[in-house]
Length: 138
Ligand SMILES: [Zn+2]
Image (cartoon, rainbow, N blue to C red; front, top):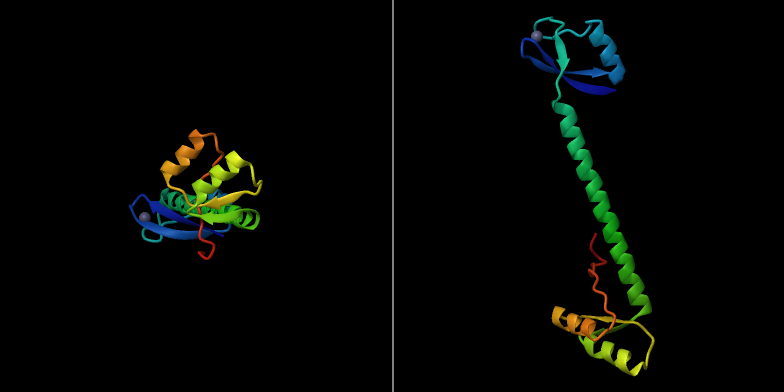
């Protein structure tokens, strides 16, 4: 079933249900759609409804993409927590130790200020910044 907003020559607007868009086309061609107010057959589809529908569809798609992105970030967080050592605020210190002393091949993660991060990058130490998503959030 498909619902159309119909508009008559008399400026009246009303809604009508059709089994499909092709049924509407056939009835319209045969002048079988009549205005419920003046019985005129000069009734046309109003273009308002489809616009509203496509708008809400695109925002639904956007929400879905945002949820997928969040899921990916949570997975990245889980992977890092499982495979790397949390050094917290000592991150830039520990990153230098690993880089210069080569004492550990284990990855680390923790917090660093943007200044610390850019210093590390200047020294040729590989650092990646990722958004840290709250796992408990829905
Ligand atoms: Zn009418």
